[in-house]
Image (tube, rainbow, N blue to C red; front, side):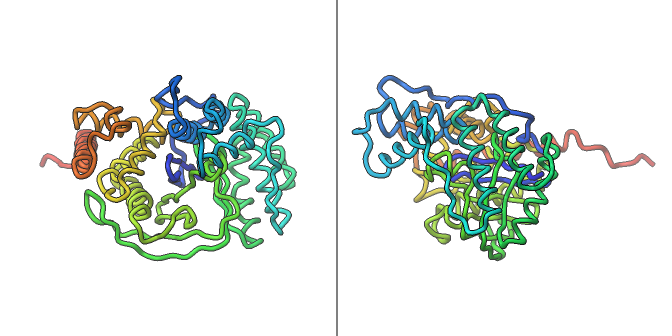
Length: 375
């Protein structure tokens, strides 16, 4: 089974061909955002908080936040987002699940996952039940029983092979805390040179396009946040429609630099936990972002949580905590008041990253076995 980790903002996924911490046994209810809602929460703050809660797997809590602000307070895209969230996750009669796909087998696969996501997101305490129901539906689709997680994991290769025969590519696994599914039709490959704070890296990038389904985070946030891509031992995989363009800073920093840091860290520090990989990659984002600095910082600030059960949220929490400590300001000074921006923020993030690398290399050397011999 592939293990996938996501982060808020444009959710990015990191895929590994071996089991890691983010694949836990059945999860409990998701944790809440670090900053609890205040009585005077305005529309913008409600949007940010609801987005973070949805990405942590609790769309029901996100709906409560949005419903607590009068509809008149939301305009344009924010109003559309609120309406979609309340209709999709806050109604006794949610919108119908209709993929309108020409291939019946692919349509059934997509509908099974959408049903599972809706159940899990609206009733987080029933997440285990929702996953059992998903296994039951997929058992019928595949023609054999899936009785447990091991059966489910083993069936993923069968699902991929069946989809490929029909002209579709799929990504499966788990994007903490839910089972994941993406479906697309087109891909192209190129070699890229990426400049990271600690040196250049050459990496193969596969561009994915013509999507039919873009993962549970995209569904959970009514298209407000999207998977941006992931990294494996072979290289990077980019979700093309998640970006306005492939030549701007958003793509070069939030995807290329972020995922290339994962690629490099897997080689340099092979035993990193999920949140540690995300922590280092997000420090890279803050150390490089210039024109995209404000939005990059916002995405990190909006999804913070103090629990490791949400690896991306916990990474965001640690990034803000460590960077503000170095700047000698509070998290609120940075996230709300933007007291430090521009080059000072980039310098602080890079310094925290370099210090983290130094500590990890020192720790690795201290536990490495001796190779010298006495003659």
